Amino acid sequence: MIPIGSDIAVAARYLNEGECVAIPTETVYGLAANALSEKAVAQIFELKQRPAFDPLIIHLASAERLEQYVRVIPAAFYKLYEAFSPGPISYVLPKKAIVPDLVTAGHPTVAVRFPAHPLCQELLQTLTFPLAAPSANIFGRVSPTEAGHVAQQFSHGLAYILDGGPAKVGLESTIIDLSQEKPLVLRLGGLSLEEIESALGEKVAYTKSSSSNPKAPGMLSAHYSPGIPLTHGKLDLNLAKVNRKRCGSISFCKRISGIPDHNQRILSPKGDLKEAASKLFAAMRSFDKETIDVILAEEFPNEGLGRAINDRLRRASVS
Ligand code: AMP
Ligand code: MG
Image (cartoon, rainbow, N blue to C red; front, side):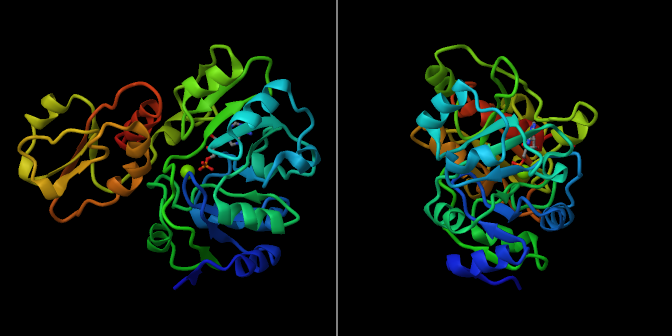
């Protein structure tokens, strides 16, 4: 059993010793280690069974020490940082040599985030190095939004799980590449495209695939697997093909007729996409494999955080 607690000093001690620790953030729980130590970072890849071509995000308390790690900081960074950091946005910037290639999967750029979660903030402020931290799940599975989810996936290898309660945002960060002339959103997440565009005062392009490595787009699109087949969209059509008694459903605000109530996850009865996003991953992992053959997930409104919710559901449905 991995010890779980809320003691920042314990978490800091293990991280200083080069161990991996699960940390709470407002997006999802992270599997953290010293980002400047290849040895510590290698343990993250091993524990997660994450392919080495998939880069990690590094986490800092604030932009105060950012210049130690990145070569260029464009004006767009400061605009977005002022508006949204600390918070669910990661910035891809040209890296300095101090950031190990293992962290960035050989890319000349590094993704940096400033998490808002108070425990995580306090922890980062006590450390003298950034934390590399991907989501604290086995590669390809649903991201953890509670300390207990981390404990369910890992029985060893982690020194400590720092428990900071349920993640408020519940979706991974939105990643924006600021290393090219034009900003480009690489992954939609806890901050909407609309909010980014309004802060920058311009339209921003985004790539639909989450893959940062064109050599392996297929592998990275199959992600977030709940362990039960999931279909996304075309609810009416899909309902006609299944035994509703053995179906689970994920819907935005409405009940789905014919599916037993205890198998329905209505993410926000009042129709709030932020609330729905915060409940998505817990809903995906809440179904009982013994009584459910398939999860039917509806298409969410394609605006605000609905776009990121649809992205995760689409990728959960790729088998
Ligand atoms: P995770 O830590 O599991 O939320 O995933 C991190 C994701 O961030 C990766 O899968 C990439 O899509 C993206 N990423 C991290 N670093 C970079 C980078 N330097 N360039 C492009 N994408 C990146
Ligand atoms: Mg992940």
